Length: 195
Picture (cartoon, rainbow, N blue to C red):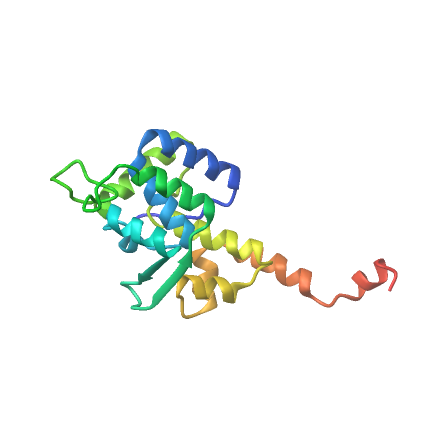
């Protein structure tokens, strides 16, 4: 079994990686864009067609039924993601797969192909421990940080059953400890603040 992938915690490193993907491989750029925007699994993203994206854009949200859990998820599309998706599908027929493999006619990339390409481009940017789950983990990690450590919100987004799995999945055990310490009722904080 390979080493577990991790979220990209530094947003500047992720931006550099996304920019690299945008000129290196539109298919992986598109995969990252969608998977990261809603913390989606690869199984929810890889088989999408241009027509699927047009339908999603018309509705204004992604609506996937997770293959792993069977749960329905509705995730609004942010304006910047909408803009970029429109650029990707411009002048393409509805029946075309969004992320085509070079093997076979109109066949989507396989999980293994995406994994290999994400790793390859990650290494080109100096990023290790990256793979198909990285956009999902990265999305969840940044939600955790932006909500001040609200693990329940992240757990719901990911569809996990318990907090422990979520902390480990997003590699936020240390961050969680810091958030808990900030919330601790500490008499020295009050004394220092002049209370």
